[in-house]
Length: 293
Image (cartoon, rainbow, N blue to C red; front, side):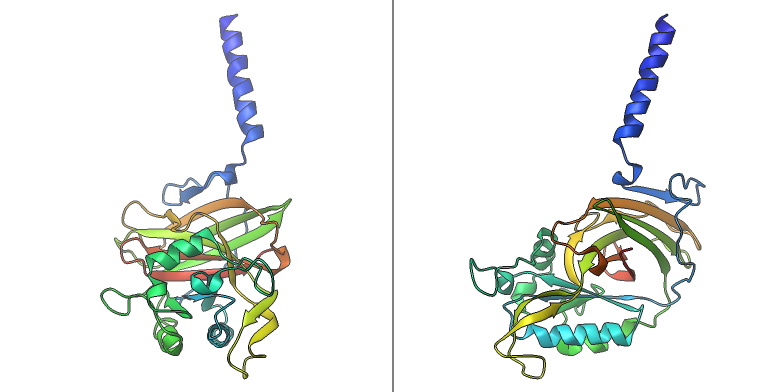
């Protein structure tokens, strides 16, 4: 009798766990060296490998920054000129991203993750607009790259051989974004890497200050198209640890996450951006961007 009660208790507990937990809610990594890919084997990925390095351009901006529209245009021109090789994340933060109680600038583009990155990289010390190019240091203590140097820095990285390839699958269902990543290393190395995933949104039409007539109306573009706007960091500002030891050539890691869809977000305008970076230097070595399905 006691055995039967114990069995029923275990069965009930197991049933409760299955009903109450979505395995994707719990971030998980599966290293294919171990052969354990439970729960993610049926996800389909684009089989085309990334043989060259993708570049992440993080643009720090604000809707009250009159110099920012020209810089944003440059960033997105770089992306369009290098399809699949450059991803732009527009981070609204700092003094020019504040909101007003009334008037043109009541929409809040800011995120807590953006504020953390702005503070960590000391963007405010250099002014806005400014950016990071794959978080590669430009000298011993500085990551910030001014817009006039974005093209040069992007060109210096974009055709380097890839150390890894990222495949990405992301979709929205029932108000939830589900995202799966497959990372395959090309060559062995002993560095420690992290994987970070972001949600960005295009085509948010809101006012933007502007001082350049070649870009739009001055002093305010009332229907400015904000693109690549950071909405959320799916697995935290700094992402998740990817490997705990050296990586082998052709080693594959699989990851899955889910987050709620933001109330103000438009699913058909959202992208997911995934990137891997060195845990010590913070330099980004590969990036992949897909439209939310």
